[in-house]
Every structure is written in C-alpha cells, then in structure tokens.
Image (cartoon, rainbow, N blue to C red; front, side, top):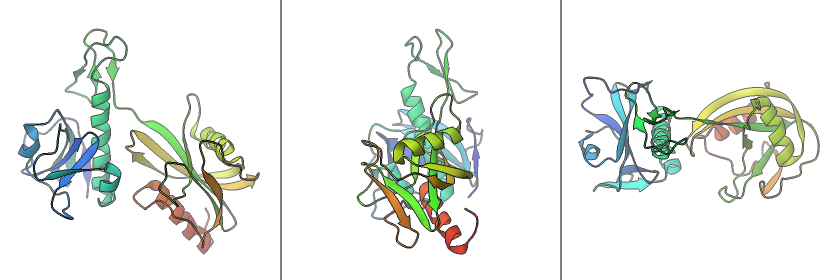
Length: 271
C-alpha cells in the first residue's frame, strides 16, 4: 500500500475513501463481529463531523480524519492502540497521522499567545490567530528508545503503566537543547544507572500517544550495575535472549527493535 500525503483534497474525489473517524480519541470500527475497516463513501460522517481533515491518498483512495460527537449506528469506538494491531503498516501510519492531526486541531482552537479563536488555513496545515498572527502547526515530541545488550543478554525494563509481565527497551523524551545521543546517555543513567557505548541508529516510528516521534538505537553496556529509578521504573534487569519476558508486539518499533536485535545476536551479526 502506497500513501501520498496531502493537505488539500483533489478536485475529483475517489468514489470510496478511507474514513478514520474518532470519538473522544477512540477510532471507529464497523460494529459487526471481527469486521475490518474498509474504504467506503464519506457521507456517513460528513454531516455529523465536528472537524474533518484531508490526509492524502492511500493506493489512490482519499483518506479523511473525522472527529465525531458519538458513534453513528453500525460503528463502535475502539482504543487506537488496539485498533492499530490489526492494520497493515501503511494503514497504521495513516491512522496515526489522523489521530495526531485531530488532536492538534482540538488543542489549538484558541491562540496560545492571546486567547483569540484561531482560524484553519487552507494552504497549509496550520491554525492562525487573526488578532496577533501567531500560527500553530502540528508538532512532534521527539523521544529516544535504546536497547542495551551485552554478550547474549538484553537490558529490559517495565514502567508501572505497562501490561502485566510486559518489559521493553528504555525510552524517554528529549529535553530542550539536548541531542538524541545526549538524551540516550542521560536517560540510561537516570533510569537504570549504567553507562553505554557504541550507539547505533535502528529506526524511527511516529507514535500517536499523543504525538511522539520515537527514535530507536541499540547500545552496548559499558559499566555499572542496574539500579531502577524510583517512581519511573518498576523493574529492570538482564534477560538472556532465549529467556525473554513478555515484550511489545511488532506493531510498535520496540517490538521490532527487540526481535531484530535477538536475531542479530543469535546469528553473530553486528548489533
């Protein structure tokens, strides 16, 4: 599936469209048991939408994001994380974009400088204040993720909000004036009390909870004993690659990062 992003809808709409409709942050899916999201006419949402945004085209079909006051008949609201588990990668990306655009639009109805109601701009994805001229664009919060390894072990941790038994790589938000690499070293020291070396970039993923850009690395343990940070890390420790605890699914970059690193260690490839 090929996605072509856009801001303005084309003059000729596609007969069917991908409609990413949300109610209070939850994505709408067909109410039928195990029914999948499919392209459909937009008329079911146009009349009742509080907000709508054109996103682009996925395999030549228009993509729209809608904010609705309630679910129309035949639809049910599902948590975005659970819904994305069943989507192919391209559609997952469009759903992520839809959620973040709608949240940006909701959060910037009023100017953050003077409080005046803002106006949506037709030529770009922004909301502008007619009084003071301040413009608000969709913004991402960069966050780093790092998977630390030594020999055939991975350093995994869990936060209190994780599902029971779930462990993952370390992660944290980048602070003002800080590079991604500096953030990695700071977060590792704060969260588990060790030092690392040999940072290697793995990949990135837009993460709509609510508007993060996850940038993932691997790093080799250098020194220090694992000491979990109070109030942030519930548990942390070294796990042999053949005896891992529960880890995130592959729909998240953490799931890919951990599994791909395990494969590399087993095969003796560079990590």
